[in-house]
Every structure is written in C-alpha cells, then in structure tokens.
Image (cartoon, rainbow, N blue to C red; front, side):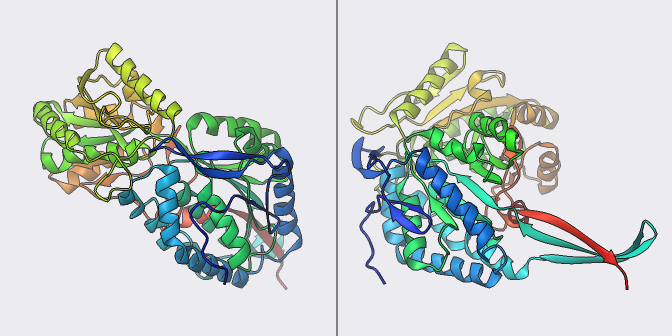
Length: 492
C-alpha cells in the first residue's frame, strides 16, 4: 500500500483512471478562510480536460460491465470506504483548513457522519434492492402476456459539489450514483478542491474501480463545470448549490432533456408554539452559528408566539452572545469563518439591508474586532422582523437569525409557508400531536419535531418549491439514479 500522503498533497485530477495535471500546467490557489493564507495549489483544468473526462465516463459506461456487475460495484465501494477510513485523520485536518469548518463540525456532518454511512448504505442496497419485478400475467391487445420491470442505471452522471459541506455531498453523490451502476464526473467547488482530489487519488490507487468510472476535475472556472450540463454524453446532473445555479442548469440542460437532481437553497423556519419548552426550543437558534450558518437546511427564521416573544428574544440574545466562535482548530468552537471575502461581504450587505428595511439589529452585525484575519462575521440577531423583509425571504448563508412573531398556529403555518423555499424546518410544542398537526401543513422537505434531527444515509433529503427537485439518500435517492424498463412477451 502507498504511504499516506500529507494534507493537501494531491494537486492532480483524475481522468480515465490516470492522475494528471492540467494540460496547460496551470494551477490555482486553495485559500484558508480562517487565515486568508494560501494553503497550496491544485490543477486548473479547462474545457479540454472536462470533455476528456466526460468521454471517459461515457466509454466506461458503454463498454465495460460496470453497469451490470453488482458484485464488482459492492467490492469497489467497500475498498473506497476502507481507503477513506485509513486517511480519516488527514481528511479531518484538510477540511478544517480548506473549508474553514470547526473541528467540532467534522465530528458530525462535515466528515464522520457521511464517512460512516454514505458508501455503506448504498453498498448494502446493491444486495437488497429489487432490481427486477414480475407483474401478474395480463391480456394485452388480445394476447396473454408475461410482464417484467427492470431497474437500470441512467448512464453518465455529472456530480457538481458545493463548498460548504464538500466531502459530505461528494460522498453521498458518489455512493448512490456508483452503487446503481452509473459512471461519474465529479466537479468540486474551486473554494474546496482538496477533499475531492484526495478521493480521486484513493479511487485510482486503492480500488478496483475501472478507468473512467470515476473522474474528478478541478477548475477555477465555473463554466468548465457547465460542460457537464451542455454535453449530450451526460445523462443526469446531480447538483447541490444555489437556486440560481440550479435554474441555470435546468435551462441549459433542456436542450438535451437532461435529467436533474437539484438540492438547492432554503430559508427554513423554526416554529415555537406557545406551549413549548421555551429555553430548549429557542436555544436551537444557535444553529445559525453552526459552520457560520453555511448550510442550506439551517433554520434561519425563528417564529415565536407573540405572547412569549419578548421572553424568547432575551433567551436568544444570551445564547448567541455566548456562542463560541473563532479559530476552527479549537475543539470548543462551533463557528468559524465564512468561505471567502466575497461571501463575507454578501452577508454584511444583507445585514445592512435588514437595518435599512426597519428590522432591529439586536446583536452582532459586523466583523469581529478581536479577529484581525479571516473572513468572519459576528453572530447576528434581528428582531421586529416582518416576513416580507429581504432578510426573511432571501438565503443569506451566514450566521444571521431573524425572529418573527405569530398569533396562533394558523398564522405560524402561513408565515412558514410564505417563502419561495421549502427545504427544512422545525416545530416545537409541549404536545407531540400538536407538533405533528402543524408539521403536516408546512410545505417543506424535512422537519425536526421537538428537537429531532432528520438526517441519515437512509433518509431522503430534499426540498419543495425552489429548494429543489428530487432527493438525496434513502431508497428515493437511490432510485433517482435509475431508469425503469418495462418488458412483455406472450405467455406460452
């Protein structure tokens, strides 16, 4: 076995089973958002390399037995699992450096949670899934017919990954796409390339995955990734990111009737009913500090009963004021920097707009004075917010919580649903029956009830409305990488 590499040592991309530099020799910098320093470089691919990767994936799907050899697929996923586990410590340090995610977050969804199940669950489904189904014999056009349904892979998948939880998203896409027999071209965000190039190296060096089945292409140019959407050789785009980019993918993919899975933005609401355990419910507002609010499913609107509004706001102020943030290397920190100077300025712009539109800036709202470097934003709390305000309607993707009063259960549901998004949410009540009754009426893809967290490789995740199309994970996510073929022949 090759020796474990240093953190960030893989600068090459993976195309057709080979680890290569960009044809031009160009690289781009990987920046640490906590220090603003350059960590190192990675290959800066062009459209030429992307087209080569797409062709390799097409050839591997069309000319090898990957799509039909389930035993091979299971073995390869298990090999990749073992390889990733062997370098888990290096992966952790790498993610902290390039993503700016706190060490605390790597113990959960940033690393440990997906590593535990994102490959294992679909590998298990390879054996358990109903790949063929027989239907009862039936007459069709005067002929008694035997009928069968087969499930087959879609083909070539373009997997486009965001920068906020890059390893988690990449592994969930790879696990389900590969388990179902597809080939993949993985395009990581330019802000966080190293975890993807590490996966590429492990695929090449530690698994029996045939050349071309997995390709990893890094580029500083977002339009290089768009080649996946435009190419007629790509059958499905699996994209996680902003709603605006998702809409562009749908538009550009229409020419080839591209199938899409889109996990997009959110502006999720926590509904705290008047009979809830208020301190327990309201302190979940600290979620906006988790990884600096850079999570599509984070609840960034908190709806408080008008009768308990002032009490709830005081609890929130105390909680957010005490939120530990700063150097992501520290084990007690839950909030590090946002990913880039551009993102920091975007968040600060939304905060300024909230003040202009009349919301009360109750806490934070600026750059921390005690942190001279790094793209940090203070934990920020807005009160006296009307749901029509920009800060209540648009996804900020930063540590900003808005608090909105409501009159009764109907009003709470109305406000929660008054959004173009529908990704996540939460409901708190002293009565489980009441919580579930409210949850039934909220138009969103997942909801936590009284502190529950809907998360796992076996649980479908995705959104309503502008929050996306399709689901990641679960049997529902597995099936979206499959085609359905119906067969019939005369009964003899």
